[in-house]
Structure formats: C-alpha cells, structure tokens
Length: 212
Image: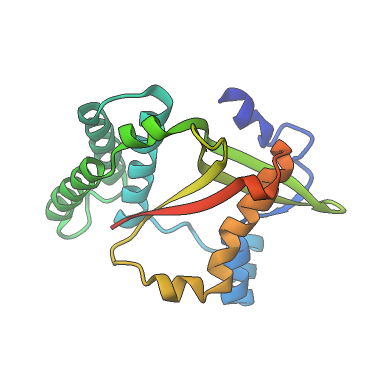
C-alpha cells in the first residue's frame, strides 16, 4: 500500500500535472461557478457532516476487512472506533450529538452484519483495495481517482470493479441509469483501470454496492 500511496503523492513526477477527479467533473457539470470557487480558488472550507464521517468509517471498516480478513466483530469494532473518534473530534458540540452518534453507530453495525465480506471472499479473489488511478488524458492533464475494490471471479477469471455507496435512501435504479454524469464515474474507472493494468475492457464489469 505504501507504493500505491507514493504513486500519487505530491513529491513525485505527477506533482506538477493538472488532474481532475470524478467528483470535480460532477461538480463542474452541476455548477461551473461553484467548481471555480471550491476547487480552484479554494474559498470554502470542506464541510464536516455526520454523513461524511459515517461513509468514511464504513469504507475504512470494509477496506480493513478485505485487506486483513478480520471477522465481523472486529469489523464492527473498527467501524465504531473510527466513527466515534471523528464525531468526538469535530461534532461534539453540535445539538443532539449523543443521540445522533448512537443512532449512526447502530445503523453502521446493522449494515456490516448484512453485508457479508466473507461471501465476497469465497467467490472472488481480491485484486486491490482503494487502488489509486492517475492516468494520462492528454498534454499535462490526468485523471485521478481511487477504486474502492477490484476483485476477480474465481471461476470465470473476469474482473469486477466495485464502488461502495452509503445512502440514506433507497436508490431508484431507473433514475440512476438515466443520469449520464452519475454513470461516468464507473465508465472512467473501468476505462482507466483497464489501461493502467493492461486488461481488456470486455473482461471487466462494474457494480455499485449500496449501503442504505
């Protein structure tokens, strides 16, 4: 993992390259002015919300489970410690803090019980977790991203790119499939991961795992 982190660190040959991530691409398509204010002029501070900390903690617990093959109880404990620390550091003085903390701790535990990491590991071989992408587009422009999980089917040998999505609401698949900007995330990941790893596009599929 150290090598992967070094792959896009500020102190390497990519430091002076102009890059764009999917989140920046999506923001620009929503509002070019907001993209200018937030990403280029950096006039706003990142928002600290319970949803951000919850999503980060769930991601971190799943990442650790897949890398270190830890069981459910340790997975839940890791989530709780990670989430509680961020909440205590940044949200302690917010109204209703304790109630919100307890509710989200309970929700996170239930999500991790439902999503069986062990079932994934039995069917698929883990290729990478939080794999960085920094791929050339043209000139000095690069695409930057992190792929949550890449696995390989033990029977067919085909690869699956997986993105975890925490959400407070049930997804409307029809609505998601009609959103070209939303679909660009996985299209970018598939294309650039294919190119980085020299794997044919027809051997790669993509899936979202939605954690409601």
